[in-house]
Image 1 (cartoon, helix red, strand yellow):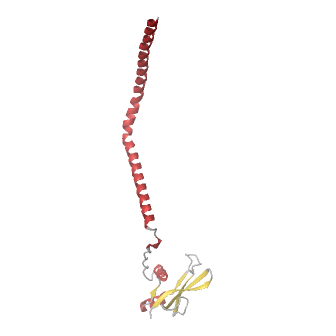
Image 2 (cartoon, rainbow, N blue to C red):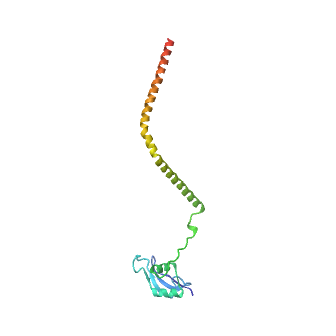
Image 3 (cartoon, rainbow, N blue to C red):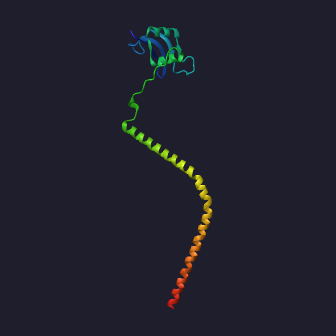
Length: 174
């Protein structure tokens, strides 16, 4: 006979109350059991002492005889210091998105990384060139002033020959 230490549900609808029992594994959840070794009331606050009650001596006896705790009861026992925590089982892959959705997500991640790298490179490049631009900016007002004067002189020089040419044409016509 294989023995289990498991929860047996009691209480009303939406008001659960569980007994921690030792039972034959082939019996129904709420069916006949061998011994009651504790209780669990999920409706009470987590830090309340009446939430989980365990009879430590009897549980140790049944574990020594060969009873195996269910996952939930094993967690209760681990919290009470009477056993090891149960291993967390891996989830099935049914909850994951399908292949095309995973490909789209991977592409989106790649695009995001590329954009971040480009932004990082753009941010790094101007930081290095900033001192050169500052020096050029300091020289720029003097160059701009000289550049403004030069076109004015050139424009005046160009206008003078044009005026002379117009005057020559008028003389020839007369």
